[in-house]
Image 1 (cartoon, rainbow, N blue to C red):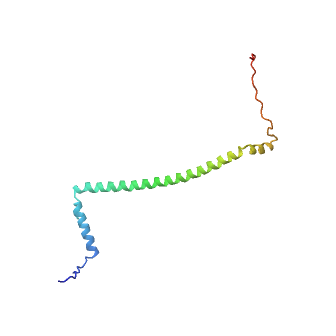
Image 2 (cartoon, helix red, strand yellow):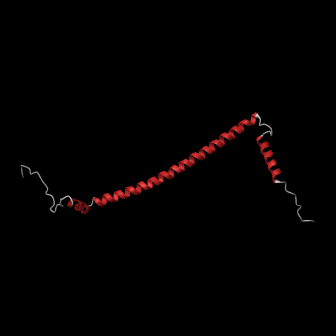
Length: 124
């Protein structure tokens, strides 16, 4: 027995391409000269499908860009909020207020405020 495989020559790439195109035309039912009217519906459907696919990709890409932009802006605004919140907390403390009032010739009260109460006329 001969166990050697016979080498069959491979067709050139142009012949493969022609066979692929003929197979595709046969599957779609296209004629080489002119597509028939019954195939125009399939072609139209494919064109519409690809158009929708491309527009959907375009819209999704723009939304992703917009989301990234808004995320960056949100981070910046959050950082600014935290900074301003810390400033308000710092400048609102009693020691800082006392320092700022000294420059305006005002002094911090040393004695606590007195509670004013209304005494009733009838005391039991």
